[in-house]
Amino acid sequence: MIDADIRAALCAALRHAQQKGALPAFDLPADVPVEHPRDAALGDYATPVCMQLARLARMAPIKIAQAVVEHLQLPAAIDEATVAAPGFINFRLAQRWLQGQVNAILEAGDTLGTLTLGTGQRVQVEYVSANPTGPLHMGSARNAVLGDALASVLQVAGYTVQREYYVNDAGARMRMFYATAYARYAQALGRTEFEVPEDGYHGAYMVAIGEQLAAEHGARFLELGEEAGSQAVGELALNQVLAEARNDLAAMGVSYDRWFSERTLYQQGQYDAIMSLLRQGGHLDLHDGAVWFNATAFGGSKDEVIVRSDGTPGYFASDIAYHYNKFVERGFDRVIDVWGADHQGHVARMHSMMQALGLDPARLTVLLYQLVTLKRGGEIVRLSKRTGDIITLREVVDEVGADAMRYFMLSRSADSQMEFDLDLAVAQSDENPVFDIQYAHARICSILRHGEIVSDEQADLSLLTHPAELTLIRRMVRLPEIIQLAAEQLAPHHLAYYAYDLAADLHAFYRDCRVVSSNPEDLPQSTARLRLVRACQVVLKRVLDIMGMSAPEVM
Image 1: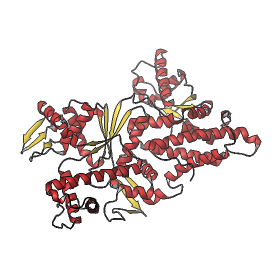
Image 2: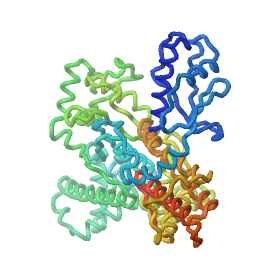
Image 3: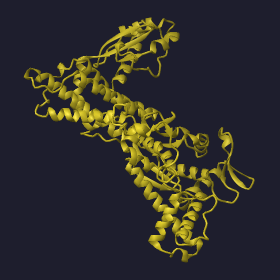
Image 4: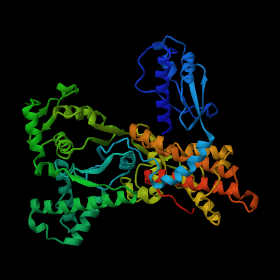
């Protein structure tokens, strides 16, 4: 990539300048920053490294920059390097190189932007993992899109990625869900003496589940007695909730390699294994009738309950066993858990758990995201229009579409608050970024259909000299950088920004440069521009694919 080539050239120039005595001896930085200037007139890339080295070199930054440039061997993509006060070095891409990238992009095709950053490391991304006690609500939408897009970015960046949904199908809340399902099932059969537990699930969806199970199975589960009947009905209700979750996630293009059941941690011995390890390591204490994990020994703010006073494992026990399974039994090099910001307080205990298991805490990343506020007509939407209850994920997907849902959920960094405007998400205007980006792809397809009688394979790309043409190419060649940035920072929102900027550059090019012309004299220019448009289609479709969005050919 260009920025990496510039970085390597700068490091070589610094060493060369020191060898020639133009710079004094000092330790070179481990990383030389290369960025894009805010003012495009200054160049395509820039480095502020000379300001950072001023104290070490005991020289003015601008003097350091001049010495570096004098000993700099420019990469093939760079036309010139210039010094600017107070010590920046600016780089400008060579026009001939830019023109040549049109064919390079077309040759790369669907592999454009594929990196070797991950070197095949096995990474698991676990996301959504909502308790299977009801339909997925709108609160899970950002989690789903963020995790799914991040997994795609990491795959493109060279990691071997597994997508996983952790099904919390054990514990007290699951028992309460079973009891609720059984009560609603019995009520649907006229047995009104069965009541939903006070701390059970009182949503309308449970009534619907009970009615459906009663219609399908009749009273046969009542004949089993309450304990066995509750277990049987609860299992059916759980399967129904999970099936709906799969369908709802699939409707927005989210899928998994594995749905992992919490129960297996107890059935296959992982829970017993971690309890033994923690006891042997002296990490457990017994007081107040409960078993506690000594998190404070690892810098935690407080110790954590592992086994409650009634003898049942707590949530944290399952978390430890689950991550033991991930790292030790399945051998993932790295695990990324996508959690809502309301779980921030649990991050420290997760890192304490890693240390207690003898694992490097750096291998576990908890990616926190802020919640989403839903708006319509400028007003906050809190309840479903259909049921007066929770707003389900599927309800919003059905209203705005999967593409709008995915784009808007990626349009802000994970740590930023988000307002999702339902009216804007369905607007067919340039105010809606989803419409604007997808219209850019449809516009490209329209241009190519009009120009299909012309072969552009032998196009003279040196004719691409208009500022709008070169601006578009400059944007196109940045895609690999954007993918690397998103992978390194675990921040797929960079793709959303990039797609919007690329679409804007394409629309500006279309406004300023006529592509298909009936004038024979314009044929060479038209051919070159058709080639450019075809390459832009590759880039735009590639970034839409990574974000999990469609690339419509007609709008």
